[in-house]
Amino acid sequence: MTGTTATPLHLAVALDGAGWHPAAWREEGARSGELLTAGYWADLVAEAERGLLDFVTFEDGLGPQSAASHRPDDRTDQVRGSIDAVLLAAHLAPLTSRIGLVPATNVTHTEPFHLAIGIATLDHAGKGRAGWRPQVSARAADASHFGRRTTPQLTDDDVRDPELTAERLRGLFAEGAEVVEAARLLWDSWEDDAEIRDTATGRFLDRDKVHHIDYRGTHFSVKGPSITPRSPQGQPLVISLAHASTPYEFAARGSDVVHITPHDRAGIAAILVQVDEAVERTGRDVTDRPLRTFAELLVLLDEKPGHAARRKARLDEAAGAELVSDAEIFTGTPGELADLLLDWRAAGLDGFRLRPGTLPYDLTAITRGLVPELQRRGAFRTAYDATTLRGHLGLPRPVSRYTKAG
Image 1 (cartoon, rainbow, N blue to C red):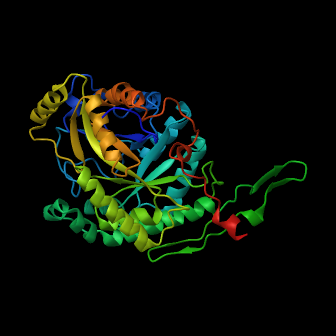
Image 2: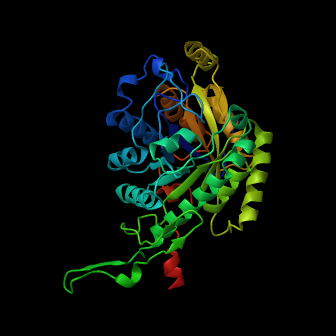
Image 3: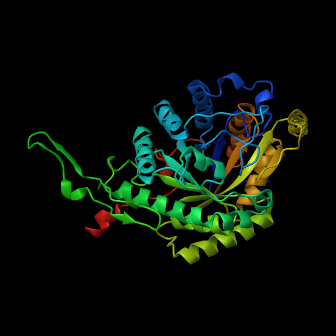
């Protein structure tokens, strides 16, 4: 595909360990001894920002990584161990200036109040660049860390079918939607001008502009208000990953961006229909609250034709199994990936979240190979033109619902 496009696409990268291939840590150039150091992550995010990407995401979990999403394992030949995603993002905020920072957090076993103030604090630290990816707990074993409840134990048959998985976890998605709503209420609980800070009169705060949210859901209640004043974006960006009808509805209820996992252009159209149906069921007004759609791709890139495929084969051999993913796996050149992204974008997508197969190799291939190729085609920015994550995605800063009411 050649030529230019009037609407630049959006690009994000998903950072995880040494990369999304299980054997990435064994690849030449991998910094496997530094995966739990702040400097490693600072270098990756600096590279992503150098490439003018919209945002980076950080994976997280309540137990060591596993080859299966629904149960722990005892493997010692893959990366295990991570650092807290929200704290990591907060550390990186003052080291960066424009790129969005989006940690994942578990919403099944974590208190909504703590989640809300953590993400709001991140938005303050990043001066308006925070996002949040709420995740329900797909592993029943996670509950044992807290001892308060049990959650459904998915089977191997369950996880082969996204719709069946979503059905088994429907209750957790309903609870997760309440967590997001409570967080949004807490983010609004301080109006923008609640802080007076008038030393002459001794008034620091306008108490009438700090509100109890008095949230009562099916699963919990939160009185509020937040302890954290309203953040630069008002509402940090909420992003969700969805594979089936229930998660699409979860995204339609409370997210600003939904990540989907099509495997071809026809799959994009089918998924977008399901997303639109979820939006209609939930009654969301997309005029006031647009929902951006990003497709996920796991990528291995190289300038030399055929080299990325051979690299994947070598990694597969080291791992003892062929790479599998919920997302489409792409191997090829940056130019070939640019062709695919522009073709898929024409099906109705707003952007893409790319999962680098190996780090830092494939991240650099994105920022120094793919990005310049898209820029040559007029399909990607040549400079940041906004200072907030909402600004990057063309999303308005919402007014506090209490300001509207008052």
